[in-house]
Length: 286
Image (cartoon, rainbow, N blue to C red):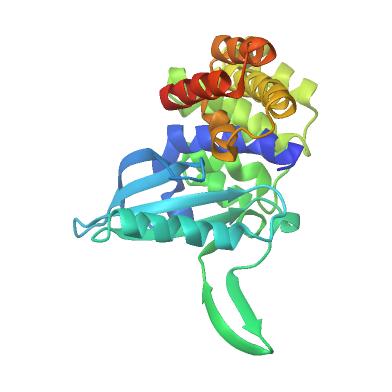
């Protein structure tokens, strides 16, 4: 995963959590109603689906729509989304499941078709719904009245510095006060190619941006990743036969105090069994 992915992944997840209903037109479901935004744990892989929307159609049918925000080039993204949908279908076989890939820039686009021919003959293939942000009209997004789309408008066709200023004004005028700081911070992330960060900060106010929970999310995530890597490195060096699944699931432990304790224990543990017990306990709690 690239640095650019890290910079966009958390803001997009946060935007989905805050303004999921605004995103329904992107998914081809403008008339659906949002029931919930769900975070689902995938078994074995240790991955989480943070952008699974539980929707209700106009006729009353509930279904899941998974959003796969794609902010970097990854040739496996269509397979990954297919795997998510297959797992969800097994988990709730009576529930309808849909998935959409949303590409942020042309460089991220790997198409919409999964097709793998063998000896030149198509063996399997299918298409997945895709949204390409640069094909959407920034002015139309801003005029829609949907704050979620306004925040994403810098990624769209026709975006400009003036449009970013208008989008910020819309957020300030219409967003609920508890959401304003986060939405402005997310807008600032996607507006960087159009307006210098210091200009954007001056425009919306440094105090507002500093009030954003998004900053603490980013800092906490980066700290957790650093501590996870440090603990994992010590365990691998001292006890190279530690089960791979335990080490893989270490990402579920995000409390800095627990990770520091694990690091210290890994340095002084008398044997591998002691480290495995502590690691298993932390993973189960995480």
